[in-house]
Length: 106
Figure 1 (spheres, rainbow, N blue to C red):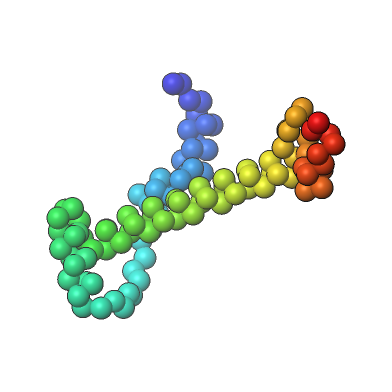
Figure 2: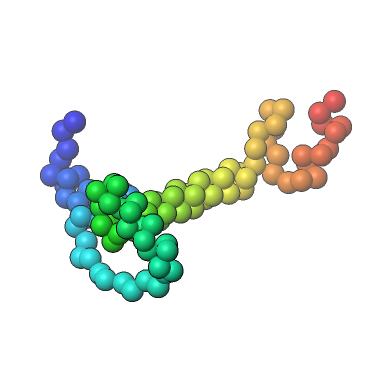
């Protein structure tokens, strides 16, 4: 796939997912208060995955943010479809009363 220089530059400036942003962004430290047993289990899980607890949490937060963005996008699409009305029996139904109008269906 051949990309123009302008497209490549735009792709660098405008990441499409939060995970694309992570390698380029400055990192910030946060303080987190959790129970000791949870920290112990988190350390063991991170070690099994070959990660630090910080990297494990960052990956999980990236995934959570990406899922939230995908949900918000799907919600906007669904709202737009409902706003435009759904085609039923060849006609667009835009309100509840029209949906339940049985005379039109018969």
